[in-house]
Length: 510
Image 1: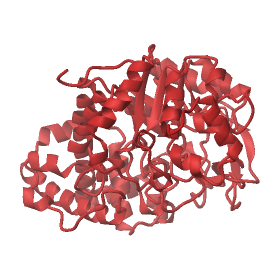
Image 2 (image 1 turned 180 degrees about the vertical axis):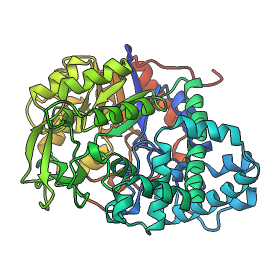
Image 3 (image 1 turned 180 degrees about the horizontal axis):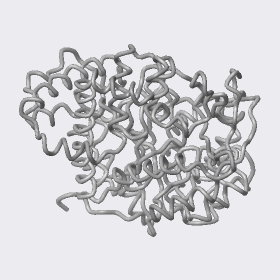
C-alpha cells in the first residue's frame, strides 16, 4: 500500500468549514490540506463525492451516479475567479450554520448560481476545454440525459417514466436528447465545473504531500444514471424495471434486524455461468475513473465480492435474506488484467469468513481494524492491536458509521467492561482524554496506515456523529467550524506522529 508508516484524517468534503453552508473544493479544502501538512498527516480520507438526493437523505452512499461529482461541492468563489459570476451574485442572503448542513437551502443557493454561471459560460466560456472534457468522460452523455429527464418528470424514478425511455429505446433516446438539449448541456457544464475544480484541489494536495483516499460503495442506487443506463448489469424485473432482490447485511453490531439497503444487486453471471461482460466493462470504467481522481480507493462492503446478502424485495427488513456467492477471484483477476495494480483498501468489517480474507490477501489489499470494535470480547479480538498479524492494514479509531470515540465512551449502549478494558489496554492516565488514548493506540500499532476521524482529533461527542447505520434521516449533516482547525491542534497531532514514527513532513515554512 504505502510501504511506510503514515497517518491521515477522515473528513468528508461536505463537513469542511466555509461561508456557503457546505464544504467546497475551494479555500476551505486548501486550508484543510495546509492543516494536515502542519499536523504531519499524509492522507485525507473522504466519503464518496457523487451527487446526492434528498430522497436518500443526501447520503453519499446512495448517489445519483457512480461517476459524476456532487454539484453542491462546487466552489462559487472559483466561478467568480473564472469570470462566470460576479462577486455580488454569490453573496449569501442569510447565515448558514457553521455546524450543520441545511441541504435544502444549500441546494437552492447552488442551483441559482450554477444557472447564472451557465448563462455566462454560453456567452464567453472556454468551449475547447469543455468539448475536450465531454469527449473524455464516457459516462457523461447518459448521466446528463438522466438528470435532464429527471427534471422533466419532476423527480420521478426512472422506472416510472414512459416505457420507451425507461427501457432506452433508440428512437426515444434520440428524441429526448433533441428535446432536452439545453438542459443536457447544463448538466454537462456542471460536471465540467466540478472536475475542473477537483483537478486543482487534487494537485494542491499532491504539492503538499497529501494523498486523497476516496470511497466506492460497492452498490449503486436503484434510481441512478448507472442502473437506468446499464440495466443488463442488474437483477431487475423485466416488466417493471424494479429489483426482485435487494442488497443489505444480516443482523450485526449496528442493527438487530440487519440493514436493508434496497440497492439492486449485480447480475454477476450470464445464463451460461460466465461473468457478465457488460458488468465487467462497467466496473472497469468505474475503477479507471475513480483512480483518475483519487490516490487510493476504499471499497465499502468489500465482502460482497466474495458473497453478498440477498434479500427478497418484498421483505421489510434484512432478516430473511441469504448469502449468495459473488464473483470473487475471477472478478479481481479480470480487473487487474486490464487495469494493473489496484490501489484498494478493503472494508472487511462485519461478518467476515476465511474466504473473504483469502480474496483480500490474494490481491494484497489492506483490510481495516477499528478500535471501537476491539473491546467487546476477549483477548483474541482481531481488532486489538496485539492481534494484528500484518502491517498491511489500516487502523481506525472509528469510521463514519461509528459514534465518535468520546460518544462511544459515554454511550449507555457500550458495556462498562468494554470501557474499562479500553482504558487498561491504553494504560490510560488520570485526566487523559479517551480519544487521545485511542489515537495513540492506533498510532502505536504495526498498521502501516492509521486514519482518525477529525471528530476524534478534536474530541467531539455524539452530536458530531456523521451517520447512524440503519437510520434513514438526520445523517451526513455535521460540519466543522474553522476555529477548531488551529495551530495548537496541528502541533499536538504532529507530536504524536513524530513519537510513533508515522512519516512526518515539515510544516510549510519550517
